[in-house]
Length: 135
Image (spheres, rainbow, N blue to C red):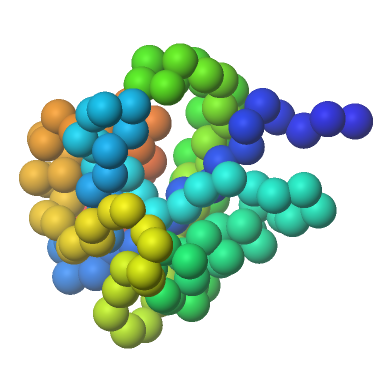
């Protein structure tokens, strides 16, 4: 049995009224996303999220809860279907981008992230859910 189309996982890491965002180029657009990525074969979404945070941020995370499951979506940026899962996560230490990763990490005020115009709808909803839980 096949899983969802292009299963992807993302982690929302909140500290001191800020959220960790990755600034990246996606299909020629400057976007803000949460760290994460694709789920490999024989990997659970939680395993993939832990691996992706290590690869992109140099952080070992603890998964708190699943916050948003929007289903399979069509990306207007990449013109492909994808199925994102969003988790609230915790981690100690400072994130650092390993060599070879083409992104910039920063902690951003959550309200500014919501109003940036650089986040996709599912990210905005996930952040709103986390903001409501911690606000």
